[in-house]
Amino acid sequence: ENREAMLSSKSNRLTEALEEANKLFDGVCHAREAALDAQFLVIASNIGKEKANELHLEMSAFDSTAFAEDLLTFMGINRTEVEETDDSEDAPGGFLPSDAWQTMGEEATKYLRRAPTFHYMMGSFKSEPPVPKQRIERQRKANRGKAERAMPAQLKKMEESHQEATEKEVERILRILQTHFENDPNTPISFFDFVIDPNSFAHTVENMFHVSFLIRDGLAKIKLDEDGLPIIEPTKPSGRREEDSRAGARNQVVISLDQREWK
Amino acid sequence: QVSELVQFLLVKDQKKIPIKRADMLKNVIGSGIPYSEVINRAGRTLQQVFGLQLVEIDRKRHTYILINNLPRAEGQYLCRDKEKEKMGLLLVILSFIFMKGNSVRDGALWEFLNLLRVYPGKQHRVFGDVRKLLTEEFTRQKYLEITPIPLTDPPEFNYQWGPRAENETSKKDVLNFVAKIQGKDPTFWASQYSEAEA
Image 1 (cartoon, rainbow over the protein chains, first blue to last red):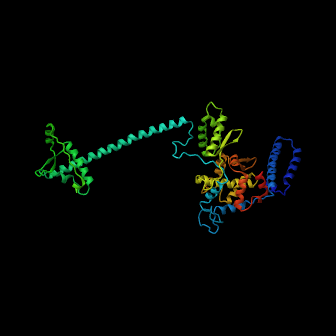
Image 2 (image 1 turned 30 degrees about the vertical axis):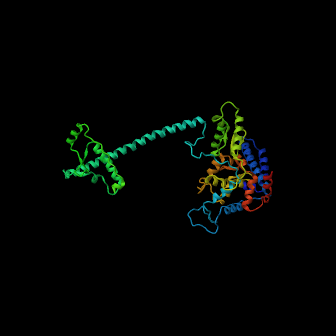
Image 3 (image 1 turned 90 degrees about the vertical axis):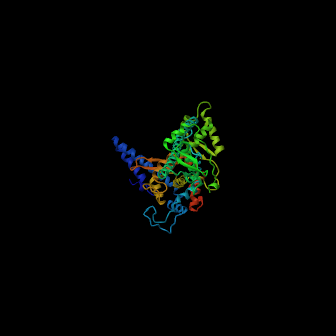
C-alpha cells in the first residue's frame, strides 16, 4: 500500500512505518502476527532499496520521455503526417516508417559485439550441430540411399511413356494406311506422299521412323512401282504368314533424305 | 577433437543460448587430452581464425557464450534483418535500464516502450509478442535478467542486464549511444558517466 508515496524521496513515511512496526511487535504473542511482521519487513526493505536507487540518480536525472522522442526521430518518424489508418499503433504524434526498427538495428550493431551466426552456405541435411562426425556420415548415407531409390522409379516412368508413345503412333499410322486402302483397295499410296509432311522436316523423319516399324513387323510393305518410286500398302493378314515362312523375304532398305531433297 | 569442438560451438551458438560445458563434453570431447585443455585450444582457434571470444559467463554452472572480438568494421553489418531489428530493440532496453540505475521495474519499462509504440499486450508489426520476446528469448539468451519482486500482487519483476549483455557491450558504449541519440555529451549525465568510466 502507498508504495509510491513511500518512494517519494521527500517522505519519511518509510521510517515512520518501520517505527510503528517496531512498536507493534512488542505486543505480538501469536506466530501469525510474527509472520505478518516478517512480511512487512521484506516489503519495507525492498522499498528501502528502491529509494536508495533513486537517490543515486537524483544528481543525473534521466528524462526517458525525451529519450523516447529522440529515438523516434532517429528512426525516421514523420511528425507532420498523421496517417489515417485503423491501426491504433500509429498514435497521434506521427507516422513511424516500416523500416524504423531496421534503422535502429543498424545503429545497434555498432554497440553490440555479437558473434555472427555460423551457417553452412550450401545448407545441411538437418539443422542439428554436426556432432559427432560419424553421425553426419550416417545421415548422409541414409539420404543418398533415398535419393537413389527415387531415381530409378522416375526413369522407368519416362521410358515407359516413351515406348507407349511410339507404339501409339505406329498404330495410328497403320490405321490411316488401312483406312485409305479400305476406301481404295487397289491403289497403293506413294511412300513419299504418305510420309512427307510439307510443313515439317522433323515430322517427316518421324513419320518415316514410325513406318519402318510397320515394315519391320510385316504389317505393311513397300514395293517399287513402274516408275521406280516406292509405294506402301498394308499387308493382308494371310499374306503376312506366307511371307514369314519364306526365308530372306525381307529386305533392308536404307532411305536417305536430307532437308534439301525434302524441300 | 579441438576442431570438432570449434564446429560444435559455432553451430550451437546460432540460437545464442549459452552452451553448457556438460553438452560439450557429452558430444565432442572424448578421452585423451583433459577437457580443460581442449576447451582452451578451441577458444584460441576461435579467436585466431574467427575473431570470436569464448567466454564463461557462469563459473558455477559452467556455461559459455561466443562474442565478437573484432574491431568495428566500416560498412553494413551482415546479418539477417529480423536479427538486426531485435538488436535495435535490445539496445534501447539496455540503455533505459542503465540510465535508470541498472535496474528497472517492468511497469516502468513498459511505460517507456509504449512511447515507442511497443506494447506488452499487443502484437507488434515487427516483433510480434514483445513480452514473450523479452521474458523468453532475451532472457534465455542471457541478454536480460528478470527477477520477481517478492510479495507483489499482481507479481512484478525487476529487469537488469544479463551476463551476455555485459560481455557484448559496456556501460560506456551504451552511454555513448544515448548521448548520440540525444545530441549531448556523455558527461551530461554525471553519475552515469562516472559509473561507465569506472
